Length: 116
Ligand SMILES: [Cu+2]
Picture 1 (tube, rainbow, N blue to C red):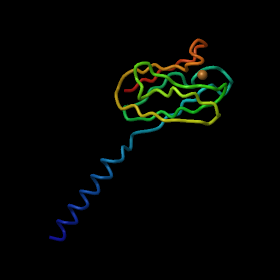
Picture 2 (cartoon, protein in one colour):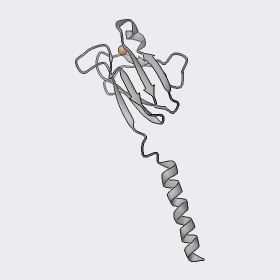
Picture 3 (cartoon, rainbow, N blue to C red):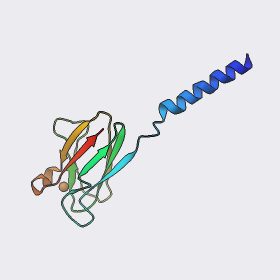
Picture 4 (tube, protein in one colour):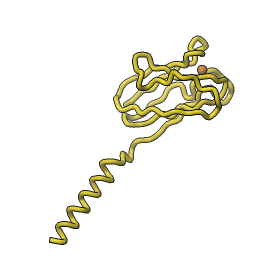
């Protein structure tokens, strides 16, 4: 009896750990404004897996934002002014997501995230 309870408990906790923690999910960083001082996302193209998180980090030549047309949940329309300001978005659905920085779109500050 005690043995079967402890076995059940073990199975339960193993399920919790495996179920809650997606060990494969990772967080990838994208800089807004390159280290070299270019108006671009760095990197501008990202390949990630479904469930991964992208951390957008304000870098140089602010202000920047990141807008995904037709995808309000992924967009961050507020302008980031301070270096180091950041936000995160998790991509749970496979697909190709184009985005851009509103103030610098005309200067070519566009990016692409491919979720596999
Ligand atoms: Cu910008």
